[in-house]
Each structure stands twice: as C-alpha cells, then as structure tokens.
Amino acid sequence: MSPVSAGRSATGQDVPPEVDVVIVGAGPVGLMLAGELRLAGVRPLVLERQAQLREIPKANGLGGQILELLRYRGLLEKFEEACTAPSHPAPRYPFGEVHVDFSPLPEPPLRGLTLPQPELERLLDERARELGAVVRRGHEVVDLTQDGTTVTAEVNGPDGRYQVTSRYLVGCDGGRSRIRELAGIAFPGATYPEVNRLGQITLPDSLAGPGAGEALDLPGRGTIKAGFTRTERGVFGYGALTPEVLLVSTTENEDAETDDNVPMTLAEFQDSVRRVLGVELPLKETIRLSRYHFQARQAERYRSGRILLAGDAAHLFPATGVGLNTGMLDAVNLAWKLAADINAWAPPGLVDTYHGERQMAGMRTMLHTQAQVALRRGQDAAADALRTLFLELFADEQPLRRIGGLLAGTDIRYPLHVYDHHALTGTFVPDFTLQTEHGTTTSVAELMQTAQPILLDLADRPELREAAREWDARVIIQTAKTRDRPADALLIRPDAHIAWTAAIDEPTNTAVLALRKALTAWFGTPRGARTEAPVSEAPQSKASTYGESDVTL
Image (cartoon, rainbow, N blue to C red):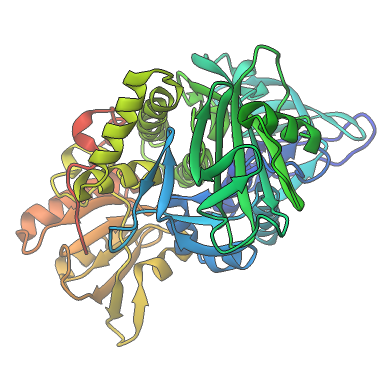
C-alpha cells in the first residue's frame, strides 16, 4: 500500500500515521464502507462531526438486498439478535399511499429487520473497530484540497485543528453533505412540503387486543383500519411491528420549516395526530419518535477527482424504506474498487465504474420512489382511481414480483457490455448449496464472507481454472458442484455481483478468451503480463438492464 502523510494538531493531537481513505460520516453507510475497506486490507479513518453515537432513530429498520449482502458477510445473524422483532418476510409493504400485499407469493421478495438506526450504527461501529478501522467522533471536516494523487482534509477536532492526507476521501455525511459542497458537485432535485412524523407506541389496555394490528376503534372517530387513512388535514397511517407495538405515522403539508435533527417531542406527535384525525390517540407507552421530510435529489456525479460520495450525500429518495438499502450497497460497491487502486492492481477506469453502476441503481430507486409521490400526493377522484388501479395490478403475480424487486433493489443488473451475454452476468449472485472437491458442503454465502473475488467452477473445467491461475493472488479459484447448476462457471466480484459467466457447455476457446478478458478488465493485469483488455466502460442506464431476465436457481 502507498504511504500517506499525516501529522499533529496545533495542540499536539495525534493523527493516524497511515491512512488510505478518509470517510466523512459515521452513519450506516460510512461504517459499512470502513468495514469493507478493512476486509480488503485498506486503512480507513472515519471522521464524524457528532461527538456521540446517534440517539435519534432516523430509520426504524433495514430491508431489501442489503440483508442478503449482510448474510453473505456473516453478519445477519448478529443483526437479527439485536432486533426488536424477528426478521421476517414483508407480507405487506407501503408503496405510495397503498399497501402492497406479498402474501400470495410463496416467497415474498423482500425481508425486513426492525432495527432502529442507533442500534444499527452501534453494530456497524463495533464491526469496523474489530476489523481495525479508526473511528473518531467529534471531528468535523471544514475544508478540502486535492491533487492528482492525494486529498487533504482540514479537520476541527476536540483538541484543535489538524490536517490528514489520504489517497481518497469519501463523503458519507448525509443529505446536507459538506463534502459534496466542497467538491462542487451539484445536487439537483425537489423538496416536498410534507412533514412526516413517526411513533413506535403501545396502546392502553382498552384499545389493545388481538385485532389492534388490523383495526382500531377510537372514541369520536370510529373504526380505523390498518394502512393509510386520508383526511382533509393529511394522512394517518399505522401498522403492527409486533403484537404489542404499533408504528403510527402522520403526513401533513406545512409551510413552517422544521429541523429533522431536533428531537420530536411527544406533544408535537400528539398534536399532529389530533390535527389529522380530529381526535386523540390514547397512548400507553412511547418507544421512539422521529420526524423527516421527503426530497428527491441525486448528485450529478458521485466522483470529483479523489473525492467520492455515497449514501444520502449522493441521493435522497422521496419514500421510506429504501435509503439505507441503497446507501449501504453503494459502500460495498465502492470499497473493493478503492482497495484495488490503493493496492496497485486496479485496471484503468475501475474506480469510475462506481459512479456508472451506483448512479444507475440510484436512478432506478428514484424512479419508483417518485412514482410513490404521485400516488400519495393526489387529492382528487382521479388520484383515488389511480391508487385503486395499482392495487388491482398487484393482485397478479408478475406485477407483484416486479414491484417487490424494485422495492428490494434486487432487480438491478449492471450492464457489463461485452461480458453480459448470459442472463446472470451483472446480477447479484444467488446463494446455492455447494459440494466442494474435498467432499464438504458450503454455499456461495460462506465463500463471500472474506469479500474476495471468486472464480467458481461448477462443471470441473480445468482449462478455466488454468486460465485464471495468473490471478490467483487476487482471485480465489473454487471448484464445486451444485444441483441444477445455472452455468459452468461464475466470476464473482467482491460486492457479490457476477462479472462473467460461462454458459453450460460453452466451447473452451470462447470461454477461456472471455474469462481472461473479464479477469483483466475487473482485476487487473496478470502476473508478468501486459494489459490484455481495458476495463469495461462505465455502465449507462438503459431500460433493458432492469429485471428483464429472471433466473431461478
């Protein structure tokens, strides 16, 4: 790894002597990035403006494709143990102002964890530190400079100002990103006038009961069914998180500005419910309260020289339940590419593919979240008709699966150009059971725990293994068998996406040539050889790359 400079503050505060990547922001995205970089042998320094771990739960759970990635890293079980409710498939999920019912499907397309953001950050912080990352709280980046090889951050710490220089700096500092501003990256989009308030509550004994999760009888109002209730003043929503705990929400249009970083009081929440419903909602216990606004914004570029953006610094979506999934997947996509460059084996243009792939994924998420805006903001009979029609469409299996893939982020297929002749190429690798050449049983998920590239030979094709031998210092070569194999071989990137696929019985010459090109494109020049092929161009967003081929293993 290349050395980087460091120093001391004016008051003598130590700065880590060896830093490859500075990460600004210790939210879920920044901490996920720090852990992934450490798995790749890179030295990150995380700088967080807030002095303490977050207490305000900006998110109440985690769901979608990121849960499968966490399982591939061996983390999901630990996260589930910390949940306030068991991990479960989501039989009903909000989309705009309707609830999509996935219960007719034998396997619901997305799962959810009831894991408040403060607890998620604690777990990710522990993991990053266990792997050797340095996390410093109460340290605010106030200025940046960069040249062709390094970026220098000016930092205000508890003991004074200091500088730290690294190969790259990644802004994971939220929707009001100071890093994005300093890098001069535009953040176009819209802010909606809605104020959304959430409360996790329990009910008094007079209202609690077996049917409370499906309907409530409120004095002065009558029966309110689970889901969304529109009134002249806004929208009231509720659903059961557990048999005892309800998630209650209100949405109102308000002219006065509110600061989402200021904790919401119980009085504010009760006043909002009263305005929307016209009656009091009796509460027994308030577990958590939070407030947020909706914005639809995406950074024009995710990279400016040696400064990159991830998570809310790169995108804000006007719907709940998708921001963490998208942001943490940004981190996983970026980490191995930065590590490849820092470790001096990245092919030309590899880091640039981060922008191409993840901006495309962000555009896809923006598409369905803005569709949700249209569904929920309509206030007339035409809007009611649109919501009714959507629910009718979701009664059919194919639209239901399509919308589930959108919400979970599982429909993303990165367009890898000359390598995407197989339907699996560019997709997140499915998990399946493997019988190894030594007679042991493993799985794709177990192989991915170290976050290393893998050539998985499923058809005992020695010519493919031999073709990859020059890359064996970077790529794990694994022979195994699986029932109903989907292909002869898979080249899997550290972010669990498939970079190349050998079709069943693909001719040797064709497969070997394509494999060597893909290895060079994604994992650099082989030992003692010149570059054979440039890295694939940064992917471009196009309709044909999304969910057109559903492959079942």
